[in-house]
Amino acid sequence: MRLSDIFKDYKKIGIAVSGGADSAYLLSEASRSDAAVFAYVIRSVFQPEREIGRAVRVAEKCGVPLRIIDYDVLSISGISENRCYRCKQGLLGLITACASNDGCEVVFDGTNASDDAGDRPGMKALAEAGVRSPLRECGITKDYIRAHVDPEFNVPSYSCLATRIRGEITLEKIRKVDEAETYLESMGFEDFRARFDGTTASLELTARDRPRFDTVRARLETIFDEVILSEVIRGH
Image (tube, rainbow, N blue to C red; front, side, top):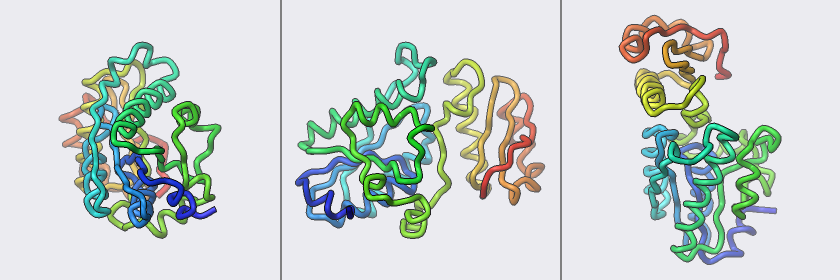
């Protein structure tokens, strides 16, 4: 099955975008179809603001209207239990409701054929919300997407900021991690994580970026009490 075969079944399509490569590629392809396309991005404390900026830019490049939906994720009762599922369930509910109000017949997301359903609690929420994943349905892999997406949006995959926090998730911890990772990106680092337990930040860097750790340590120590270099080496 081809993406074009899926698109032609609908007159109005809603697409959940994240600022990453997968949804950027999907939005670009959908924008070339005959359907009216609407894009939706969630803004919450779990999403870095830099990803919202990329979502805005990809929508502008594709000529697609974008709605930014605010999501008070920390107010969800029981969010600490089965967090990924509960969070995805809530954000998909907001997106599908907004898309329905815009007259969309379907909502797509950027899950691709390389994503392992066994490792993605959010897959259950996608199925329950009736959200389709055309890239996955068409067998389109991450490698293919990276080879064909606009280079501006061919960025490393980043999980939400909540995955960086050890222990209780608080707004203060989230903001510190976001500030640190935004700084690392501004310094040209790629594919990194700042894991934080409330006192110590453990940086996961690529083999290429690890020698540069000392150049950013002083700035990061203004954010965290202590910063160490993790034994985990990122993949790029």
